[in-house]
Length: 201
Image (cartoon, rainbow, N blue to C red):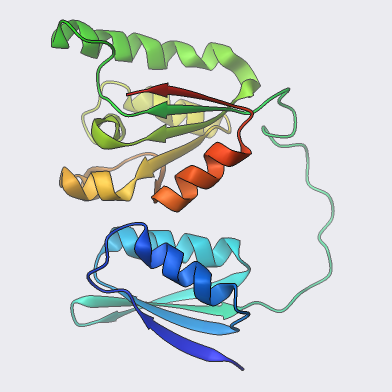
């Protein structure tokens, strides 16, 4: 079994995932990726799982070792019921890079973003993915006025992706309560897959 170890300690997002992808694309069967923060651990683990690997995480002192082993191919599972994505007429990705809407008055902007995110469910099944980055990640943490609404969207099938680098920057990683901690590679990939990208920054 081809096996490699990749040292990504000290590397900022999205480099650990990009380096992991380079190795996976070479056809490796087993890969251990060393990282030094939980955001990188989540991003690398999710990428490996989506690439068909079984993932285990080991704590090594102050570091984390994410090991992916290529899962054996099994017979195809029975068809699943239609998903949120499959029943949508188009896939809209909403990119939110702020915790307020518009400029001029910050208090008004904060009220507007609450109203806006409380109303986006009216887009129905066309709303496919919601990406939170920069100050937008503050909307996904404990105490956010839109937390309940974001959880409701996620329960309805909308993907909620929260930038790990941004959470780390604002020291909010441990306070995130909704969505998947993600990286720039994931965000760009989802933007490519979307039929329409709407950006609020």
